[in-house]
Length: 242
Image (cartoon, rainbow, N blue to C red; front, side, top):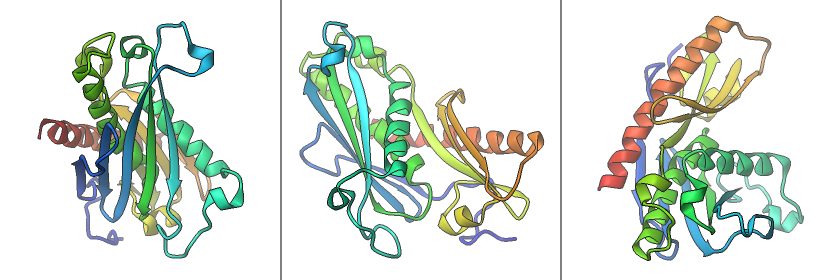
């Protein structure tokens, strides 16, 4: 069965990383995976949470949110509801964990960086796009700190590996890379994979949505994801060198 947008099973959607999209944050990136668009900003503050003071370690955390009309129908703002939903909380924690794998918190010194990932338009893969874009925003924030001689190490030591993420899934028995929304909702197996630029795993989240899946299918999905993350790492590198 052909993909909705005519891509090959192993093909990413067009990926764009636009740095400096927002004026005020120390790092900002608009990341686009096809029709999915996420604004990632990195905000630097001096000092760390109370429980980390005196440790000599920095801190990186993340918050994720979706604009009310990022999807086909409007959803209420969680601030109006008075509580953050479980899905939002889970994705925020995933982004934070993923980005902490890219940074040497000791070399960061006792500085904190908050990554805000706001989904402007959703067409599947919002959390993976957020991780991929947030890495670039984080890198720019670390460079900003270096320019003010506020790091305990060099930018290269602080950002000691790259991190990107992509979705994979099985639709009609076929493993596919970087699912758009119509594929995501029809997937028999759905997986989000976070990798370093060298193909090592940071996190793997996989679910059999319509039953179970075999080890052979898992291996095929992981191979697709690693290849996709290597491509994304190259896109990150090009964005940071421009």
